[in-house]
Length: 199
Image: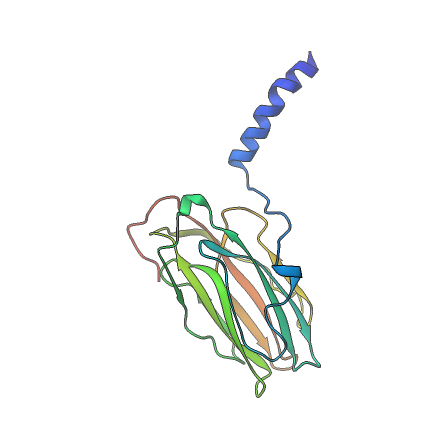
């Protein structure tokens, strides 16, 4: 009898879990052969394909290469409930050598990064590439822990659950270590259009 009940209820539990619990993204494909999007001390521009957003960030630090980092990103399609992006843009530049906090304006989601290295500061300036999905609004926002955990360490940040999106970041810069720590601003997005605009 117990085996019969198990056979009846196991498929129902599996379907319910798939519909109502957070979905695990799994391992990320960082592109061809896991190559870096930049070389040390050079600028770069990375944009996800149309309709996709950043879901993972990987980086390694080298003191001997001008206290710079190699970077790589992974993208995944945004939830179908968001639809297609209605517009995309580059946000304002965040200057090298300073701490900063920025979210995508107009309820946008991060879909790319642009960066330029400055040898005089041994740091980079940053710009987010953001995309807006109809008039969807963020909610349940939170900050991740610091990436990397300590200045000079490798960094590997991944979004582990479906329907959470990176909307921005706050960073601190160490003038001693010449490195930056990141906390990513992560939010869910409504499944309906909002009557207001967050800037």
